Length: 515
Image (cartoon, rainbow, N blue to C red; front, side, top):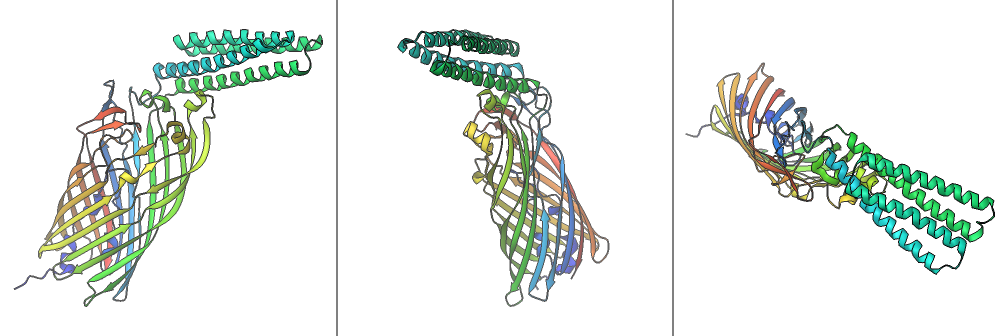
């Protein structure tokens, strides 16, 4: 005789895996984009709170400890759905699918800016300025050699003398870089320009400098003033770098609202197709600090919130007599046009504008979720979840950063696979417990220095208590073992190593169901 597992009897035994389903997964994945609230029977509503605390520590290339870079965070998930007749259903789901929260602490290559970074910046300025000065000397020497005008010859020779003094100063600065020496060189240049201005004015007053010669002298003076302004801007940018006492940190937040409609079909309405529009909001803040980021140290970006739209679609199958439910859900990519306010000190050091606000594109990835459950016996339910996200297609490319480095700020090499298996058991008419094991593949190793985790293994426990016929409270927790990973820069340089890390996630769910 075939055993029948009625869903009403088994409802209390449904595993609470979705209470604490995802944390520090591959890429920027957070919530797992769970859709099971829509798949419940009758009228259903839930509120889920999740808290995540991970311990992610490592060392930089010099053996300095990173501190715990994974900041604890929490988020809510909401869902409500109802049936309209026997065949139609509508629902609304809210979650926070993608995010990051990382911050380095302590004395390491990801905090502040040590003298080596400032010295390197000064040497870069000195070398570039020396090359530019020598080119100007060569140009003036050519004009001096070709002119027969004695006044013009004096102008060219005076310019050459001043530039040769500056070249000596830049050579000295490259050999012994310090902000004090740079300030002294700038002050000497300011005095030289002031002297040149006075000399030109005296020659004009005596009537010795007129016409083309006056225009030539003024053009040379303005060119030197422009070089001085660039040197002052570079000096200020280097001083900003030396004054930094912050640490590298990143925060990414997202919010998603999905409106879903479903239609059941088949002889016993066992099949359902569903889908609908998805609104998504995305924002981020990034600060790169310390010697690890080389020329990009000091980079700061505020990415303003943007809301854009995508869609989801899926199909489900149910067989109530054995408590079987299966659903396959696809979520589309969502293209965002974001505005990034960026500050890049390296550009000022190179004589360019370090501040810029521009629009750029980010495409959050598509995903496929498989949710499955089936009764094992009248009091036991087995569940499985599989998720795929192609993080290898994802990148963040703020305009100024990308133009300066010719690299993305963040990207990943592999796609994410996530698998979770669970078993729920009804212990009493109003009480059930469940256990789960899980695996996340990660998105490649080496991975970004802003999130150095290569997937995880997990074990979880949960319980559900039916307070009344309609109201229930669920609670669950998981322990996670994170995969070891090397942190790298976008150019592939390995800058850190993270091993033997772990974390936990806890969640509480309040749900209402009326069938």
